[in-house]
Amino acid sequence: AYFWFIAGLQILFINKMGKVQFGLSDATTSYLALAEMLGVVIGSLAAGKIIAKDNGLWIAPGATATLAVFLCLSGIAPAFPSPVKIIFLLSMLACAGVAGGLMMVPLGSFFQTRPAPEKRGRVIAASGFAASTGLLVAGIIYIPLQKYMQSSTIFILMGVL
Image (cartoon, rainbow, N blue to C red):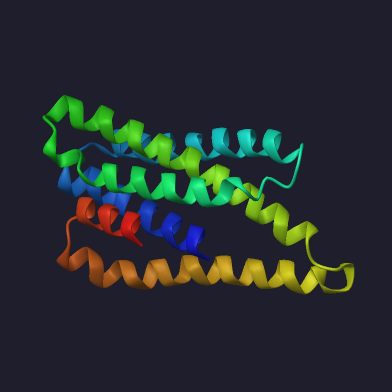
């Protein structure tokens, strides 16, 4: 649920950060989300290679901490001059995506392989429900947060959470 809550908030605030806070075009703002999604793909592929050897669950805590660091670093992008801040933000979002993929795949694998066969379906269903709930809560929380806080501040807050 945590991963999907943060992912849901990120997409909403990436759009607001790009368009409102930085005054970027729709296309350039879309590249911010694309950078993070490409990072998730890279992180997921790397995690798949790692968990082929063992369950890979050991990488999830480090990946979670790394995700937090890159989210906080994304939040300081406004401190840089104009051309640099976009490149910096693209890089930080891509790295956050890699960390997210490295976190998500081992946890998903754990939920699918660890439970006893008779409980596996319920565990997978509960995991899916928790993920959907995280996305729903992100959408609900976005409404008041976006009124009172800058998007870059929200990225720092997400990293701290």
